[in-house]
Length: 528
Image 1: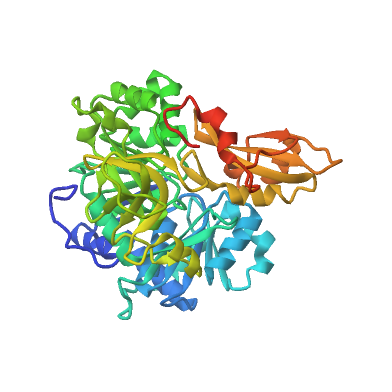
Image 2 (image 1 turned 180 degrees about the vertical axis):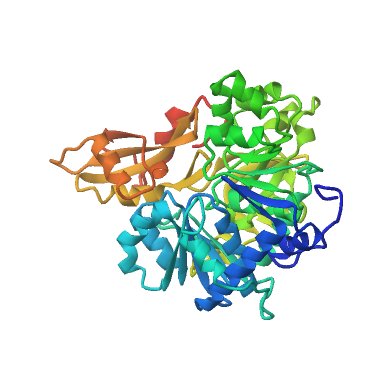
């Protein structure tokens, strides 16, 4: 059953199938609202077709990559679906990135054309000479209108449909995750990956007549992009926020938004904002959360404050197109199993989960910690241009080594630790080698270790422990400023300890576990 209880779309094969279906079924119904503009399904489909024609005229074809850089904007969804009609892929870049990071990611992606938000144009202009593969840059403004270059660009062309040579296995999306070796890796997802994820994800959201989907997560994050496709699957009108700030969220919910996917840090801010804000969010029919752990006291407080709201937790990775397991609403309010509130739930349809001994790769019995492995048709094609890195995480029989430590108990997955040297801050993944690479460039630094430490607002925050070169002096503030010139701010250390020497084992390896232990020893979630 769909949101309106009317037509039921057939199983999707290509990424744009759902919009095409709803354009024919309900052409004049609202599909997408953004700031002051609303597009119907027929208008949205028309715009996607025009962008496809514009891209083709610019020389974009099957196997090519188009780049997008802006805060949340429906143009990102339009370009992604337009690319799918050509067999091309969209690479979405993190708008928080510093110029050096964007320089690397854009060139690594091989993007031939960029769509760039007005606010980000100065950054692109500063690195434009190094973007040798980019032939065209199209500027897009938040408000649109006759003076918007993106609007002028797409209105020059008649809409076009999907090309005959396009296949479901064609790459459709490239999302950059922080790199364990100091540089980001492009995760390549096919149309088939995303369609499978969308179909499985749609089941369970409880959309019904009158539902409105709130798209607030950033589109450079797989949670934002994949979640936006879930609403399109069911013919549900979506409200997209440019940024998930308090006034925008409250305005959207007061305006009728019923379903939302947000990070736990937003829930924390709501509960701290006072009764009026808490009351507004109680209007949500479904509060879906993920991308970072929800502290149990916060979750219990939210559930008590919003007794009529369904809660859903999701766990996954960019490498599996988003969600792999979900803790469904009924499990949140199951009085017989309160312990499951700290679990990541059960696998989505089509997802297999196993827990293995990372040393022997033997499958472990129930309630025994090991590495979480996933196998699913949602699994990425691989890391862009990095076959060796791909082979390191995908086994010959198609299992993804997540790097997370967990255990299975009666089908419920409990994720308790990480093998990967990763920090999750406010739902964003930060790999310490990437930060360490930048700190190492500071002239006074001899050696360093970057770790995640607990933070009541963001879950974790970045901390660096640094030893200086003999005779050199500097301050924590100076090192942080050095990082902020070269990295997105959320990746930068919020605190730095300057020490004489870092702890090492007999082979000389820095003992990060020893550095983390004092901060995590009294925490239920042991990230050491």
